[in-house]
Image (tube, rainbow, N blue to C red):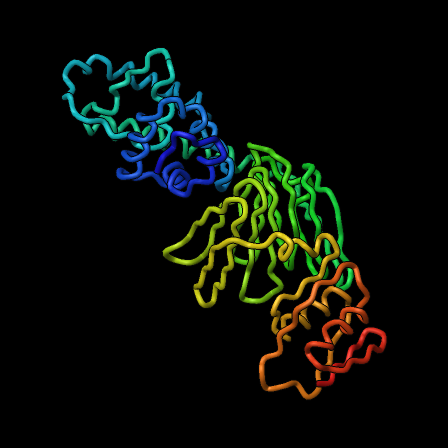
Length: 363
């Protein structure tokens, strides 16, 4: 890992950094302590990233950083008389907060506080955590009564229609046919979260304090300012393709819970089979639909039929389907269903009949 060129966004999207902030342990504390000591210029970005991650986690009322510092100062005053007696030994930070903020000038702050006698540190931590718990409990109880009801907005398209719209934060969305979005009206204070069924292309407005999160089934895609396409039509397979920026993908697959994509990379996730495929993609193949471009490239018959049903809002009935696999290839720009089927029928050798919203194909 090399954080020399890390930005705030890179820290936020780094799984090991997020784990260190939210669930610190001795190993991660020491690892990040060494990284930041080697690159002290990265402290400002790391501090800002920590605040973003804290806001992203389950929001609870807690003591502010200033309040915690005040508690540290009081306890430090009581312990200062014993500082001359403490042993010189390597200090391992307790968490991300202690690493990122201990170098910040504060009156009365003793830098070697963590190397005091173990029972004093433990007592101090128990005291601070106890106050934090009590404050959190009472403040949460009070705030719960004052929270307004959560109002969701929903956007959906029927087969045969697509939709273009702009969200309250300025992000732009193109929603493919037969798809649905659901999200909290005007989003929340700490995140912009969307639930997607189907396919959509997102151009995300930058907001460093509110990452953009798209939840598709059990898969969560997080971005700060980028453009990407997600496709999932209720099947076991999910496709995420990144055009610009960077995204972090969280998946419920044991050994690979997180993956990061860079521009030009795509991810195919098959959750039931625990299969992940990461590679490059052709932009026209992925987002051609946003420009009324319909492309088949050695596409199996079932997938081609599903695409046509969704694209034109019709249903298909297949007769005398060959035992061998039928593959379709063709490229059509804003054409009628009749012209598309005429083009495909020459190579696949079938006859078709269109009767309103029903299409019959005979091989």
